[in-house]
Image (tube, rainbow, N blue to C red):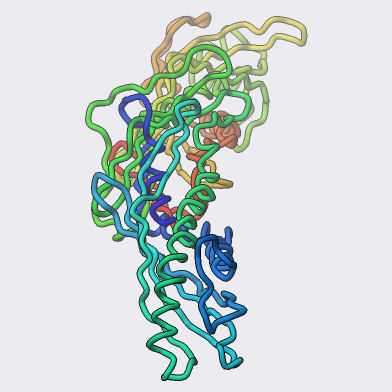
Length: 454
């Protein structure tokens, strides 16, 4: 059960080898929670215990004891321990009350406390590739046995009961609970390799990179995400050299998800064409009117070409895939493209290009999680470069437009970027993890989600 989780995680990782774009580190917090939930929701121990009260083939009835029934199965206490390089060793401590009639006709009650221990090995379905777990080395250890039988009956009756029923029957009835819970937990993994949509832009699939590595403190699962546009080839994750690492000082037994900057860059590449903009509103936020008269305040030659004020239309095109950079506490989105301004003569007439600028600017990114999707919101960072391309109003110093363009990007363009980002990016779908509770930290070249249970 507990180890189910562990092995589950381990197995899922089998796949093609590639540099991980996302890494899941599973600690005992989530594993314990998921296994405990699976055991409680499946009621498997109660079902197994109920079978113990039935007549079993090859098991003789105990002389002097009748109407044997099992009731009051205690809530199991599950303990998991990592076995480096193997998986998880689990111990389930529970108990039950066995009732019946003694040969005197009096009600009999025997309270048994026991431990179920096992180690799980990971198998993989040859046809589907889906991991399957099989427990091995299951053992039942009796912790204590208490009864209300008269003391003069204890030696013979209890010994016979232990030998013929508990020692012989319970292992065969209770050990299958391990496999049954594993099956139950595996249901929470079946969608993990499914491609998840990013609006109408494409899909993201968290492909397993390799077999998970089990250490003394966690199971590490490496993903090589497949970022697939709606049309065309998958977007390759760029090799940026050293792989990002989890920060030090994380709570013992805790779980984290690391998303590399290269992976986030690939995700944002899905949105590249949606970051293009055609803006023709005359009044935008707190900006002055978007007209040739306003523009002439920065480029006097515009007034010569357009003595009568004309409305402006601005076209922004992102020419290179967006790029995410990260350093502790800060993340930037870099955009390279062109900004071209047009004058509108009259309705129905093709706007006339005034000039085209090559532009590079950065946006500050704030991250959050909503409905298990990573959300981003941006604000203008810096206008990093502005250089002239074509111009119909003669030569001018592009730097003279720095203030004008900076204000324009902040007021007119950034809201459009944030609208596009509202689609959100799906996170790995496994073990019913609630990412909404995570605490987010920006580290060197990575976003780390410190996963919480509540």
